[in-house]
Every structure is written in structure tokens, then in C-alpha cells.
Image 1 (tube, rainbow, N blue to C red):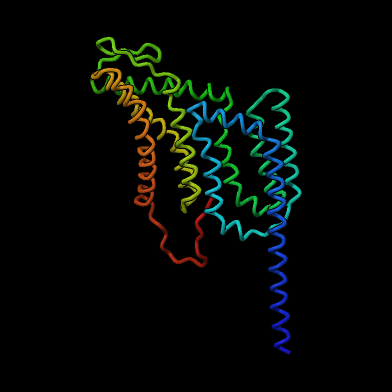
Image 2: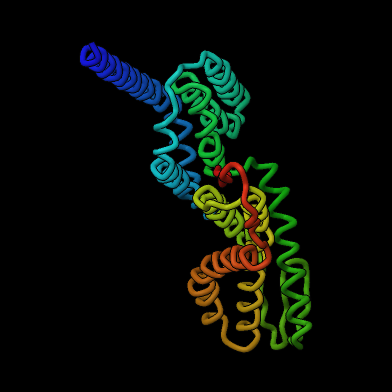
Length: 311
């Protein structure tokens, strides 16, 4: 009798695993079909965005975001695999909202609406096919995809202008503190000997800012740290990126003051641009080191094991 019961139990377990595997296979097939339809519908939008990535250095790092998102999915694959596949019809609401935003962008020539609608529609597909639990665990990766989209024109102008002013003012201040004779005319620096340095919009630091925000966001989703530390790390990427850009401008301006312009331009475009990102990452590592030194972990026994929050 017990042998028959154990046989029936094993058959029921095997049958349940078969049903789960079949459900996952169906979900994978539906996902591939929907993603293919999504890519076909949004192909003109994706193509124009790729052209912006290649043509505008401020947002060239955006083309790495989809690849980074795929790596994050691979890194979180165990947590995502544990999620039961329960299709949620609420995903149709997100898909409808994304398509509405897409139509609005097409009708009123608002390209950013088309691009943001791509991520919204993709989120709707995940919710529709995978269900609420899978959607919640993948939500941060979906939000990460928003960083691949170049800023709308008004936002770009509202950000790049103050960044350019901040870079110019900070550079002049530091040069005067260290004793370099410099005169500012707008965003142009005049040195003794008629050497001039123009801090153009391309030197505002927006490229550094967008790149380091993406790098910090990826680190935040990979690190196993308390959530408040990850938020501080992500928010601090803004002043760190601005500071690194100012350091690059100060070094370049100082070279213009003491050397010929060709050597300074070589430093600005080659060496300085290469070294600033490692410097920013080193600053982020320094933050993590400070967290380890300043935060004393609670060693008191607890009834339930603490879990590390994860994005």
C-alpha cells in the first residue's frame, strides 16, 4: 500500500513539473512572438535612436544599456526562474498606454514619447506574459532601460546650460586660487599671452554625467548592499561626474596656459577623457569603503535571518 502511494506521489510530482515546464515553454514562445511584433512595430524608432547614439557623443553610452540589461537578467536568472508564470491581464493596460504614447509621438512629432513608449510597452509584455511577481522582480531592469533614451530637447537644454556655466565658473575659481591669471568672457577663458580656451557645450560634462549615471545604476543593481546605500551611491553619481569633468577642464586649461594649444588639445581629447571614468569609479569605490568603515553592522542575534535588499 505504501509502495503504491509513493509511486502515485512521484507521478504527481513529475506531472506537476511537466505542467510547469510546459507553461514556461508556452510563456517563452508567447514572449518571443510579442517581442518580435514589438521590434517590428518600433523598428523606425529604434533605428533613429541608434543614429542619435552614433551621432551625439553625449548619449553614445546609451547603446550599451540594452547589453547591460541582458547581463543583469543573466545575473538575476535564479531569482527570476523561481517566479511562477501566471499571465496578468493588467499588462494589456500598460501595452495600451505605451501604444497610445507611441501614437501621440507619431502624430505630434514628439520623438521622445515614441522612445519612452517602447519601454512602457515592453513592461506591459513582461506583465502580461510573466505575471505580477516576475514583473516586480524585473521592474528595476526595465527602469534601467530608460537610461538608454536621449533626453528630450527641452530637458537637454535645461541641463546642459547650467552644467556649462558650472564648469566654467568652477574652472576659473580653481585657477585663480592656485595663482593662474585668467579672465572669463562668457564661457571663454583668456590667459596671459593671448591663449584662449572655449568651454563649449560639448565640454559641459553631460556626456560624463550620462555615462556615470548608467555605470552607477548598474553597480547598484549588482551590489548586495542595504538599499539606502545603493540610493546614496546612485545620487552621488551626479556630483562625482560634475567634479571629474571640472578636474579635466582645470588640467586642460592649465596646460593651455603653460604649453602650446596642440598639446593641450591632445590631453583634453585623449588622455583626460580616458582617465576621468576610472577616476569616477574610484570615487564610487571610495564611497563603498567609507560605508564599510563608518557603518557598524548589527551583530545582535535575531529570530529571523536578515535579507539583503536587492534591486
